[in-house]
Every structure is written in structure tokens, then in C-alpha cells.
Amino acid sequence: MKKLSIICLFVFIVVGCKSTSVTNTKLDNKTERMLKGNWTITAVNFSGSNYLAVNSFNVEDSKCFIGSNWSFVSNNNEGEMSLNNPSTDCKDFSSPITWYVNTDGNFILKIIDSHKAKDVNSGYILKLNNVTENSFDLIDKVNVAGKIEDITYSFQRQ
Image (cartoon, rainbow, N blue to C red; front, top):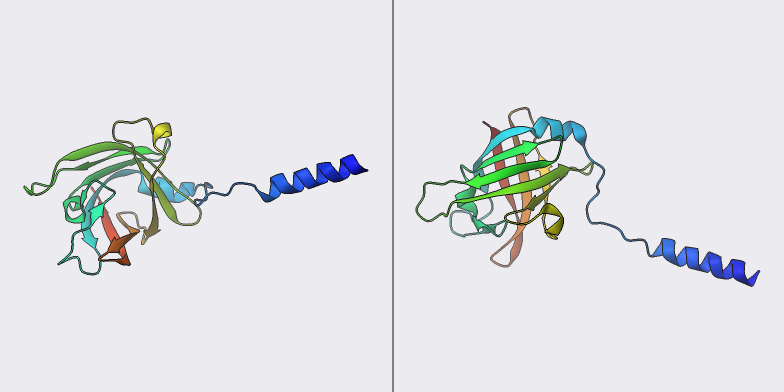
């Protein structure tokens, strides 16, 4: 009886301490198929965007993402993003990405750069909004002058 109590206690502790993830990994395959293809960011908007700079995805100023090209492959959740803004203030940047859309309506993004996807331990959780056949928005939470604000990246199909 004592062994049974110890085993039950151990099972209770193991189940009670089960790790949970911030992101639901159950995929929304229908939405992923809608996003398959090549896209361009046509606008980046947030409160104070005319006066303040925000570093998006730890890559470049958010304004440099306008005109950036993104490709999404839905059958393997890979793709690529590239900044090629002709503005002299923006650097060129290109990187493979991995991504998925979960059933909570979140777009999970990892910028791979020069690493393997399994070696990249950080990424971005963005809210997917206004999905149509030819456009969608990704909404991120960023610190703008000490206040958490939504920043919206508007995508159009190429």
C-alpha cells in the first residue's frame, strides 16, 4: 500500500509539473494554405510611427520592411524574407524563415539567418488578422517609448 501511495504521488507530481508552451502547436492548415506564395509588406503602422523608430524582428527599422518580400511554403512551413528597400538608410537583408499558423490565430515566426532552424531558440508570436486571398495583417506587440503598442504589418500578394 505504501508503494502504491508513493507511485501515485510521483505520477501526480510529474503530471502536475508538465511543461506547457506559450504557443499552441496545433496547426491551422487551411489558413497556412491561404498564405502559401509570395507576399510584399505594403504598410507598417503603429501609434507614433511618424515620429518614432521601431526595430522590427531585431533586423532593421520598421519602415525598412515596407516593400520587403516574403515567401511562404505551406507544406514544409519554410520560406524566406528579404529587405531590399532602396532607401539609403536601410540595409539589405535576406534570411530563410520557418513559420506556422496555430489554431489560436497566431503566426509563429523564426528568422533563421545563418543557423539551422533547430538551433534558433527564439522567434516571434504575431497575431494573424484580416486574412483574405490577397492580403493579411500580422500584429506584433512592441515597446514604443516605454509603452506596449500594436504594430501592424500589412501584406499583399505579389
